[in-house]
Structure formats: C-alpha cells, structure tokens
Image (cartoon, rainbow, N blue to C red; front, side, top):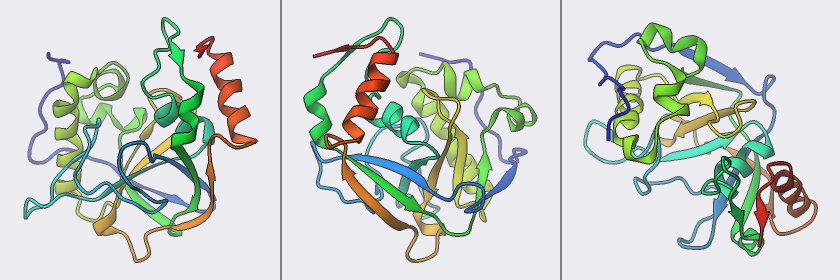
Length: 214
C-alpha cells in the first residue's frame, strides 16, 4: 500500500528546534507489562513496529527509542487506547488497564529535536496527512524512512518532535537514547493505570469518545 509519501533525499531541509523544561516541566510515558518485561526507564532497543521506529545507527545497531507526550490524555490515547477505533467508535476492554503503567518524568533541561510539526513540514514538501494523520500501519516503512533520514542528517538532534495523531492538542517526542546524557530522564512518579485517579481519567476519556466499555 502507498501513502503517496515520497522517499527522503540525502540533504533534506530538516528543522531542529529545542524544547526546555520551562516549556514542558513534566512529560508522560505509558508502557505495557502484558507481553514484555519493562520498567519506567526501558527504551525500545529495536523492537516494535511504529510510525517512526525502529531505526538504525550507522553501524546497523538499533537506535534506542522512548516515546513521551506532554499530557496524560495524549499518552492514554497513544498507548492505552492505541488500537481502539475512534470513527466509528470501537470497544475498550476495561480489564486491560491492569497492564499499563503511567510514568511522570522530567527530561534534560533542553532537548534538541527534528521537528515534524505542521509548520516545519512544507519545507520538506510534506503534509501532516502524509506523514502522521492519514498513514495506515502498512505505510510505516515509508514514514520510518523519514525518521531515519532525520536521525542521519541531523547528528545533534536528540529526538523527533511531532503532534500526536490521536490527540493533536499534545506534543510528542521520540527520544534517541544514544544522544542523551546519562541518566537520560528522571522518573518523578509511576502508577498503575488501573488505580485511582488514573482509571477514572481513562474511563472519562473513553466515555467522551463514545467508545463502548466491556
């Protein structure tokens, strides 16, 4: 399947921007314990199949990646409700909340990121629809080619920055572990999403989306 997304060239006009802790003092991450053992600080080491990862370093070893969002609603939408249809409204299994952990964290004082935000896509001759909004999972190899090119062509970038597909009011980053200081992040709090008040936050969101609970 083709999204009409062109392949990146060797010298794309990628924009590197910065986000500071003054702008976003707390970021959020959700991970699942359903299939693989993981902790609050576990980076993906080349596993998975997402829009922007896995990608590789020059020596063909994987870039270790970690997704964060600027709001809890965004990480719920992107992780807990990731496979739930919004149009038409789908079904959400409430018991699955036991499998998810919410992490509140702080990043280094400044993160330099390649911007895939809407205002920076025209200079790449791309649209948000092509790269993020309207690309199905079959097109992930094509979208990953752009995150790979961004990583290769902007060696000081520590992340990819973009607007969440499922909650475009939030900022998202895909962090590159190999380009971050050690430790790469500070965990402030960690919670099981099935516990209060997080369970109620998710269920309130589910009901606002008119998704059916089972």
